[in-house]
Length: 364
Image 1 (cartoon, rainbow, N blue to C red):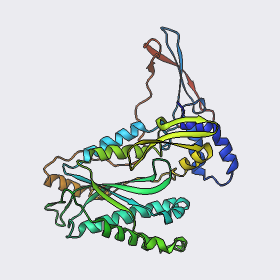
Image 2: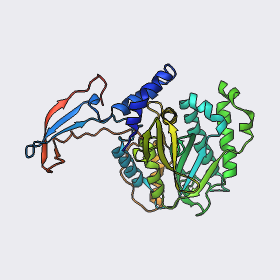
Image 3: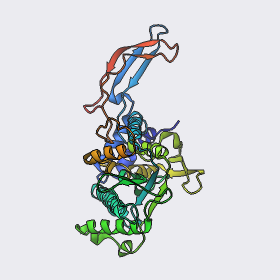
Image 4: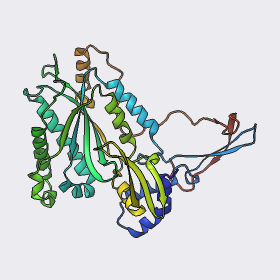
């Protein structure tokens, strides 16, 4: 099976040489990490089977959040934590999309634009939900930033998972939303656009935006998603990985990469064939800056308002789970690596006989 790492190993050097000096340091670090993941470059251990004399090399993973081979365990841990926070009410998925006319600015000012995309969309949704014509209370939001389409084009948007209801201003009642209706997307779109424009107007970037951007309708979707379980499972893989998994890559041949994707309109699988250079470019444009939080919490889900969440659970007559600090950063495993692994030939335990040091100073 062809993996992203192999594509980068074969075609990454030419990509770096062609765009030397123009590739962000964050992109270079991600390329290096994925290329070296689970190879001798990062070091590892040697295991030996006393029964059949089999030897096995086990190399360290890079633990980079953009690597398709890493972070699956962290994703499952995050999913379990969010499932514990689910309320026994219907949920909505509300999606805010950054217009095409702002995406060039977003590429070159990622941290600022993504931060404001979170802030303005969450503020717009909360403000409209507080309107008595819709809900009239405080809501809770879990937001996840996604920057790609299924065929790897640049398409920044935020998915919010929102319970279908809110807490009254006095904290004494739970206000239920209608099952098929949460807020109207037309005023929500205008409010979102106005707040983002006001934020951008505080910078010189406003002069780079075509006037048509402020006249067009901004895309906002709102749809019911049942209990929220399926929506969480949909979001979890996007938090600790980026763009595509290795099992979607079908072929690397004659400098062309073939991968599959599910068409969002028809839900049918399609294939996309790209030159390796274009494939790498599309992948790297979704690399986030170091430390950027792509999962954020607002309303009674925010860390500073978790006491309000306890009020909600009390009103809904459900017990409160033990709450911990949420993060989209992988958590360190406090347990040491196992000293034995099963032999792939006979199944007997293998002994660790040697530790292989990384080939350079940087290691996981």
